[in-house]
Length: 154
Image (tube, rainbow, N blue to C red; front, top):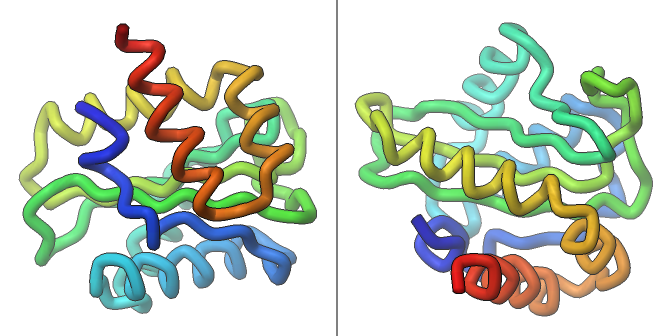
């Protein structure tokens, strides 16, 4: 699994408007509609349903919201950097300013887990998160995400 297969450059955004977890989910819905043509209402509903099972804020300002959806044939992702951290009910109670959302087909087995592991492993690296936070440009963020994984895999 590689970031280039998970993430399109147009699925990377810096948000200045997210003021709550729900608003962030709506912004992610809009982003994945633009990048992948996924219906925003269905995306938001799926993300909130998954979130109701337990928060996907994994700590250190990072959230990994994810959901399974009908109508897609592969795992896809969206990356969001927030200019102002928001409460996300994270395990460490720290506000979130980095979010990577994953969407998988309903019947995706191991591919969904591999993608989640890749994103989690990458965003657990504080040096990568620091680079992401220091570069609020979508093109640069995409490059950091896709190049960092290539370097780690080498």
